[in-house]
Amino acid sequence: LAAQEHGGARRALDLRRTAGELAERSQAEIVAEKHVRQAQDKIELDRVVEVVRTLPTQSKIVLFAVILLEKNGVHNINTGEVFNIYKRLCEEIDADVLTQRRVTDLISELDMLGIVNAVVVSKGRYGRTKEMGLSVPVEETEAVLLSDSRLGDIENAQPFVQARFDN
Image (tube, rainbow, N blue to C red; front, top):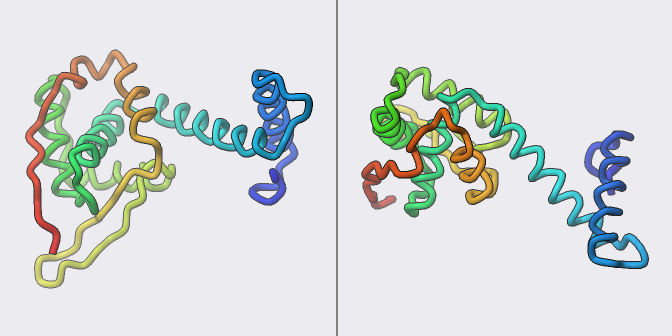
């Protein structure tokens, strides 16, 4: 299974070790395929947690804005919506507000890291925007962000998320 995805020996050993630990915890006699699949999920989640944990504060605020929009049922989130929530979050926790261009760059970085999935969409005469959604589990990602003391009271921030009707 490890060879199918990446083929790396270290990854295979990590997968084997994690699958063995999961099998041992469930008191199984053998390491079954289900343990390997669970191990893959755990390793991927651990990778995501580590990446999110080590993000710069501004990137974490942008990511939290995306999470708030998703949790409020907004799909195909665009850059403008993220920027509006981001600004309000920065004001709530007394953080510097970056320009919309810089926030767009941070969204691109989150996309490259595999945390969000962003695509550029043409809106005709209204220009272009990035539409995005989370590529990682909401609850776990939110928990990692809220564990960062630099984000202060971001958990209690309730920026207004405006509902919109998609055409």
